[in-house]
Amino acid sequence: MSLVRTQILLTDEQLRHLRRLARARDASVSALVREMVDQGLAERNQRKQELFDALEESARWIEQHAPDLVHTPEDLRAMREERDHALGG
Image 1: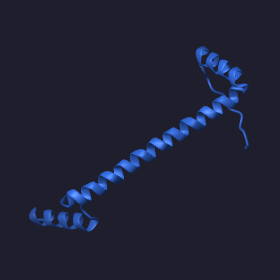
Image 2: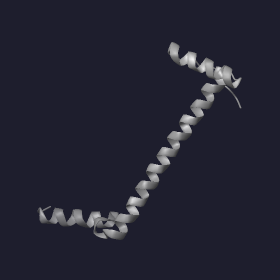
Image 3: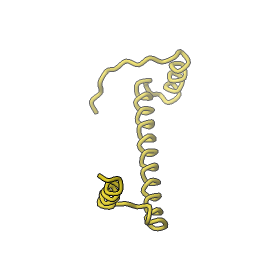
């Protein structure tokens, strides 16, 4: 693992908590910050995946229970042409 030096700004309270936790775990503050960043990113990715899965499930439900609401690009083009024709275009 290649590490890159960076700088972050923390409140006094945040740093105090991190130092206390680091001592309790016999770890460095840097190691804890890396771990917490990894956890935060993993949780964010998990939430994004859950939202995507829910969206896919909703799309499948609509296709099954309300197929008249599902339009292909070809359907949309035909509808646009009909509308344009009706408007005299």
